[in-house]
Image 1 (cartoon, rainbow, N blue to C red):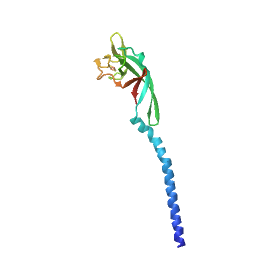
Image 2: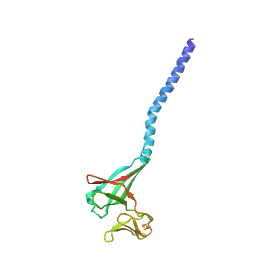
Image 3: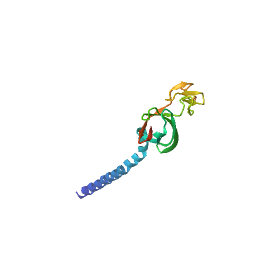
Image 4: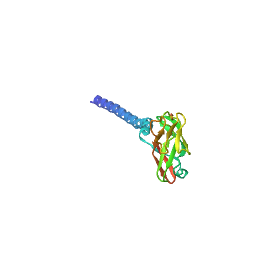
Length: 159
Ligand code: FES
């Protein structure tokens, strides 16, 4: 009978030790896994509004060039990237933001005031003020990103 009780205590202590060890492992492991996996999951689901400049800088009917530096995280790798956008408003309230990257082979377009068009010097691509293709090989309009204004501050949606 005494031996049974001793064995029972041993079993209990073994089970309790394993249980406490498992609990400690879980308590430490769950935050560690979240810390490792979290950034990758966050990147796939979140987008941020990125401040680009003052809305009052944009003349009505004239695309204005803005440059922003953004940091992109892919897992643990952090890259800094400079993006350029032309922002246009025709009424001072509604804005569109267009990439300055040509949709043909990726050269930079520039606004030509006299022609009121964007010109791509690589293969003579021409885009209208709103980004639509006018001439040349570009297969589609300039890419647009969402833009909003708060207290004269322009934001683009990035991520
Ligand atoms: S890269 Fe712009 S027209 Fe070819």
